[in-house]
Length: 208
Image (cartoon, rainbow, N blue to C red; front, side, top):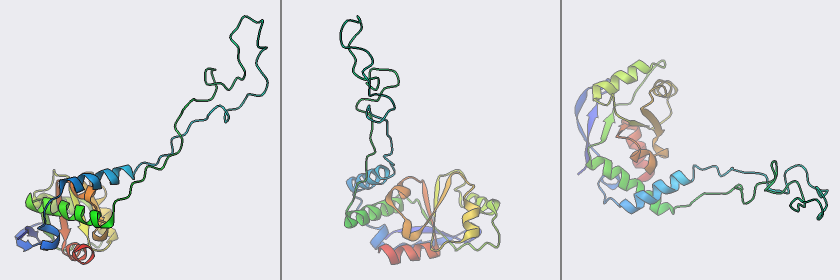
């Protein structure tokens, strides 16, 4: 049975909470974790690198000088790649690097990542945060009380709260996600995952 420490909205520990076994108590498939991370990172590539070939640079047309009799090497165009200002030979062209991972494998990879974090005791559950105004200091205080002040942390919320989001975004070692947007890379890229109560409920509804 997978469990996690439970905390109040002020960051005080208040026991433990049982985590859904369908998400947090499953076999960890390391190869699927690798595939999911590789797919995520590859899909971040824009693939927009581009240089001009000899047909795209300005110039060309007339032969620079006659073929014979000048004592210089023969040349047919000033757009040749060997000329300064000429086109680039075999340069990069726009390319789609996107990879696809079947939905079933994506779900299994996500379950593996959640289960791995639970086994390492790197999952915590926090009461839902309610803020009337953005205040980064309040979030920092909660993290310090939870013992996560110096750790790379991922907050998972059930719904978007503008004041909470604005309070979190200035902390460089803290990132946020909505529960329905949780992905394998985001889970593995942090040291500790903190779910709000609504976030854990939403995660279970979407993925369990």
